[in-house]
Amino acid sequence: MSVGSHAVATPGATPTHASSARATLLTEGTRAEMRQIIARYPQARSALLPMLHLVQSVEGYVTQAGIELCAQELDLTTAEVSAVATFYTMYKRRPVGEYHVGVCTNTLCAVLGGDAILHELEHHLGITHDETTEDGRVSLEHIECNAACDYAPVMTVNWEFLDSQTPASAVAAVDTLRAGGVVHSTRGPAICTWRQASRVLAGFSDGQAGAGPSAGPATLAGLRIARHNDWRAPGVEKHDHAQDRVDGAAHRATEAAVASAATSVSLTGDPVEPADAPAGSTGSHDHGGVGGVGGAVVDAVEAVGAWIGEHLPGHAHDRSSSAHQPDRHGPDGQTRSDGGDRP
Ligand code: FES
Image (cartoon, rainbow, N blue to C red; front, side, top):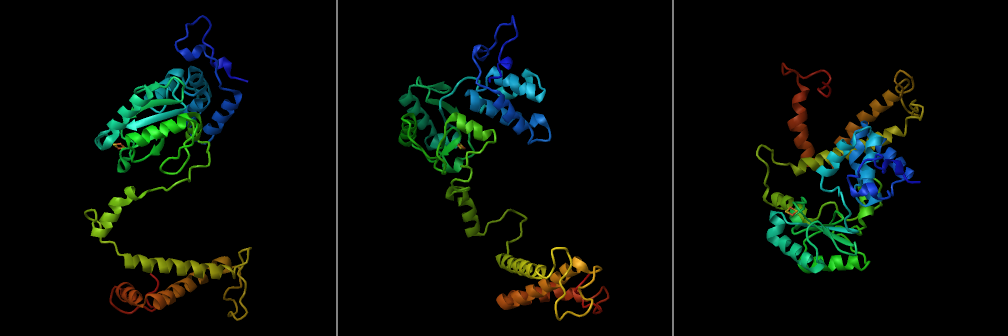
């Protein structure tokens, strides 16, 4: 059942948008999904952006009926919803192609071939910016920097990246999509339709979020060069990788010791009395589980020392002599009775 009541213009009023005269595809199911989205946020109005994507996933673009439904569900005015929908360029107020192609023509992409890609696609498709092919399959948009300059020149299809493009590769991609073929983003996922992509942006997963790498070689090139040359930001201490290894060893040893000690603590929190433990050492509720964990910490500290001594004797010596030794003395320089192991 459609939510037609929200798509019908006020009786006697002149429709102000083409969508007002168009049968909406929004249904009570759409309304229910909007309420799922709203439930994710502490403030209902925070749900507006994904709700508009949901409208696009159903209607193909942000229709007047979609604006009215969002306004009703969020207790906003249609003017407030329209203000948001017309501010962000990812929301379209008229139909786009099943595959919406964006070509970056910002500085870096432009000089590396973005302008040539856009011109080639315009010529090949017979459309220009903000237009759609007659078959409704492909629309074109020149877009500003996509924050993917490391893979310039880039283009997107339904916001999935196609990195390091050429005019020929861009034409091949749109031709394959128009012919009903499958094109994969250079970052992994298969490119889906505009409506499917809009549904993902509304927060309904298509299961492809984990496809492909999270950072490619070009993205990490600067980091590799900086490490190779030992470059650091001003004021940042030289990174001690040997210290990292010691800290990592200590962390692993502590985890192992705590896990070992945990096996001697019952699920009720009562420690299990070891057969050879001194009477009262762990057997009362006064010490209880906390006493067991305290023992585990002592064991962990000992295990850390043993592990470091075994695997990294040089570093273990360095740490004990430079960091631990001064703690054994009080402010007056006298050796403390507790050996300085505790504050
Ligand atoms: S200039 Fe094209 S992604 Fe930045």
